[in-house]
Length: 312
Image (cartoon, rainbow, N blue to C red; front, side, top):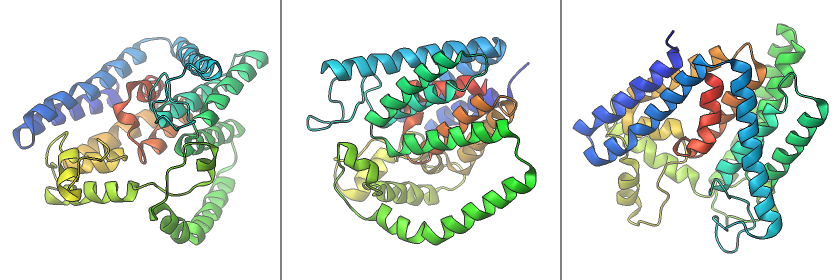
């Protein structure tokens, strides 16, 4: 059978390649293989045994986390985040990406059938690595995923979930404005544990504004895959900018318009539906989706493939 989530990703890859007709041909054709890779991985995972995929995925993530921690403790870890950075980024080479990989391992430690010792050891290793990346987005995504696992397993009554959602909505409404102001305010990007207490977005809102403005130029099909960086350079008048908009939905809207956003939403919706019966896989996909709204983990197969395999 053909997984709907994989078909959505294949359609996204097709739209990405097709955007070469109205965007930058070279950029579009360089971008298209990535969603095709994810579609193939998801399709392959759907053909394999679910328990085997999740256990092998956990083992792979544990190896990545162990390699990163060993390199950190030995002082051999390259400082990918800068010479003055204390953030752990290797072997993924991007601290927030490694953070997401690590919290994925923490969530996979909730898999049923694992011995208590194995689950505790793996969860402790991955959580330690996640903390050493000082990635706020990864830690928040992991916490949300863990809450989702516990909530699904507890099978809380519907009325309790509704009350909790309303309470969270009220709290969010009260703190949204001051938090948004502090998130948008410029602040130095601390490269150590102090950044865990920092709520600044370090320029993300400006990157998101550029993506939004670019998308409004051609809201239905976008201006073409791989064009955001050029638009950002033109807008800011400098090349000292990130290569991505740090938000998958907004960058997709800018480059592929509402058509691309619809396909991306379809992939996510089908993926969440497919994992609904397995709380751990559901939490991994949800955590990835949460972080992808504020970072560029889509461009990091090491950070995205775990969620794609779980969706399969």
